[in-house]
Image 1: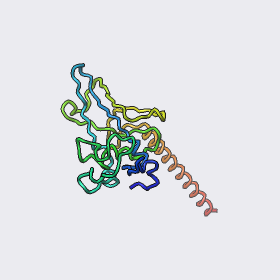
Image 2: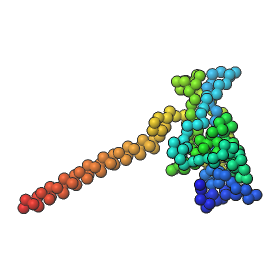
Image 3: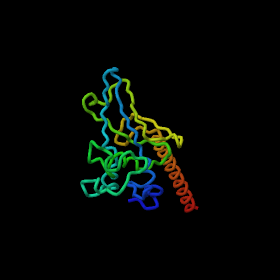
Image 4: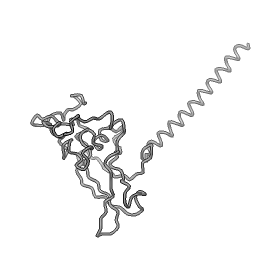
Amino acid sequence: MMAVEDCAPFKMSDNKTPIIPCDAIANSMFNDTIILSPNINSSVQIKVPMLKSGLTWWTDKCVRFQNPSSKNLADEFRGTTKPPNWPKPIYDLDKKDPRNNGFLNDDFIVWMRAAAFPTFKKLYGRLNRTHHFIEGLPAGNYSFNITYNFPVTRFHGEKSVVLSTLTWCGGNSLFLGLAYTVTGATTWLTSFAMMAIHIMLKNKKMSFFHQ
């Protein structure tokens, strides 16, 4: 649950209806639609199958976020309204998968994990390895069809689409690689410095006792 002061200025709508979810981060949730297609020929367009589930941390999906116990989320959220920038209410975010709605919607959970820096990446979808894509994306040219819903011009922001191969430790990240390298090197140098200081103090102590 958000503290009441965290919801400002998106606690109530103009007609005094409670906004669910209510804070500024939720109101700014990314909602562009992105379709990836291989350029096979001009007459046939094949969409790359994308999964909108399995994008979150286990702790977020199973511990941090929870839905009301009722199976009918529309009834649970009756008397509330969606954030101003949302095209759909929280209980109707995924029409294809009823389990991916409410506070357990993967897109919502991913967006609500606040980024540490102003420039960040958020996982949008996963490749569904079926039919022509069992072995991944075949080599070739691809096109993006993007429905622009998420405005960034008013705060001079930029949006990019990144295709990346995920591993057990996440996606490709230059920052993480540099951070781990610098941290490891600093720890290595510190350990040698502490060892040198320890040896020097030990030698001085032995020298004192031999006088």
